[in-house]
Image (cartoon, rainbow, N blue to C red; front, side):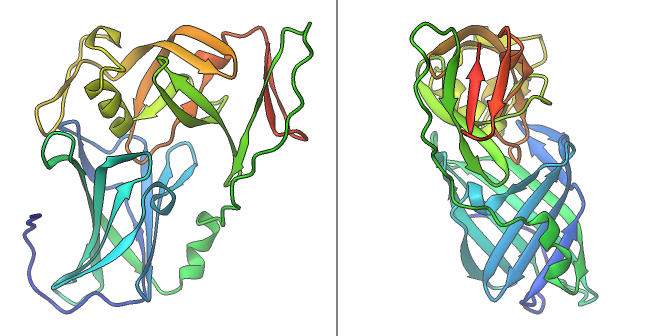
Length: 287
């Protein structure tokens, strides 16, 4: 059972809209707020909207990462949900009641891992300011159209190009990427990212399942999770990365915050003679 120290107070108001700072997180046993500028939290008649603004300007919605289910508790308002890409990981988000009734609020999150017992992986707490109108937050809570799978004609048999269909989702393009021949996930094509970037919870899963080995990690700094799992470094070498029929070996990857996304960056893209995006066909072309 999750236990937090707070005073019992009046119930959390609903609706409630909060603009929060980056907060303090404990990630892999290390306190950090790297990668996050702030959080935006909306609660409207039991419906939650939670978004993180990253330092690169992207907004990541918890609602697209988790199945967000409201949970009433005595002196707070909570949501709980399983991570869509890894059902062994589940999160609790919470707004404790304001004990002073002066409009001071915090937003808290805990990420738990059921793989090896119920262990706390990441915890975050942020101080928040109440705003009176959710419309203030709507510009950074864009409506995401349903993913579309376009039809892409096959490559010419004598051509060296590989054309890969992309998914259009929330103003970004995603392609399926296979990691070390074992796990396929949808990555955002991001030419502004230096490395292939993988969130910490996914790296932890890859490490525990043997998809990433200790010998794959670069550097000497060691990260320790809340349950004692040791991650040798923040950067690692991906033995193989497959997009379409193109397979590259020894691609450098880096660990991103849990709130971040899967990014197909320059450590993969720059290895090709050329690459481009065909907007009309919604396709990634690799040569």
